[in-house]
Length: 347
Image (tube, rainbow, N blue to C red; front, top):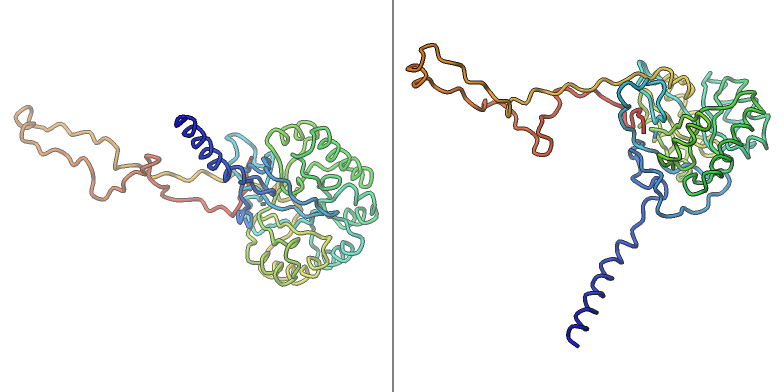
């Protein structure tokens, strides 16, 4: 009887321990962490492994998070990576992008602002909205903007069957091609959500390049033009990809001052494809010699065996040497090549 009670108590304790773990879910936006890091394009990105379902987005719901970038594989051309959150460029070049449109009430107003300033942008459009407003898409192209793919109606692609994800991307490519005469290659996954397997599949099927971001003003959340302006201007950096949403009137309201202030700071606006074409490899930082653990060879004394017996041994550890890292066994890099937040990477 005592043994039975002991067994039941053991089971009860085990179940109690499992309860907190069962309640833990990953971020619906990324399945990992949110890049303050994207104010961090904005990052690897385990974005795809979503453990909880976000609320069903309204039409044109905004992307939620961006992946952190990882270094490109050796030998990979910096202009032919699978995905970008920003670029490493010579000069103050940036790309501003607008998601979820076109919106017939707000996008034309934004296009006029861009035209007045000679700024080229990239619009990640929904296929369903593009087919509803083809004239706006044509106006974007006529003004020199880039039109790219943001899926048909904004589902979380890893949460739907592969065939359905194919249709989301394929139908949107076809709709844009029908309007503009050119099928886009750049894709921004809704919510920034993606898995390595699905990314590889879409890459093989459509030749897609995946575009995230490095500056996120959270304009879908905080509908305040001044806040949107401040977040963009304070986080921008050369090579940045800025995320915004032209479906929100407050975002469009924020643009005149935001664009003017960025121009005043010397930033030059290009499309995402133009920014990618400028991308350069970032050299690996040089690592200082680890003198603390290097084996110093004792010099042979000149006096033969007798001299050897009286020779003073060389110091095994210079006093000025910096100890090696306990975890890596190496010293910190002597110099570190600066990288912008969420710097370009393959992931």
